[in-house]
Length: 340
Image (cartoon, rainbow, N blue to C red; front, top):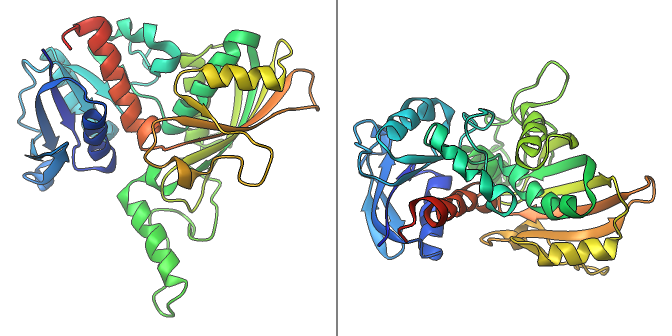
């Protein structure tokens, strides 16, 4: 016996990826509904070998449905998530709306699957920010061994994290560089993204950090350990899909780089590719379409007593969004609903 599953926001990048991953991982679906706003009503989307037509999110009745994967943004989620939850349908939300609500669990299944029991408070589970999700998968097994004191992370985030319009802007600006008179002015981003990097993701806060950087701090504390100190610099780069991170970790105990490499090789959701030679590491292009979080460049940091550096790469539309949501659905099915 399978589940009755709803995907809300099915015509967007993340919604479509959710459908792809549900099919790829053979999630036990008895019935599926794909929802969109009225302007996308009737749009066809693929689910495995099936073609589905979207239904109207505004009028959909969630009664009798087991779970709903939401990829519709915070504003719409504020309206429709409580409606679904009240009807008895458990919401797995990809927006930032509920991530910092103490009554809503923020889940990365490889890290804190046990926290899923907290769904009972509001019938809602939150999916973390894309940049946080891949980082905590790498941090957790190391933290269990040597206890992390502090993390310094710099991110190199692809434009797909900003949606389809950002992908189009990078593509159009890149083409425009080679065709006189077809230059494209920035619209999604405050500066040109083609052949450039922008140290600005989300809005600026009073202390000079951006909200994306704040998210990484707050979410790491909620998911892994509130005692971990985190400082982040988040940068948008001219890459279509795949986020990269340079992570510096300070531990309470010494952790040898070889032991760290072995720990990460055995950790769930991680693939270690770490050869000290040209090409012996993973780049964003190679992670697209993959489930794993890739770790490379593992090495001792000799400038502090107990430090390591590593390079972390993942498909942000997958582990950073759709895959993590489907993994939450799998945990929900196995531990709570127990049908599949």
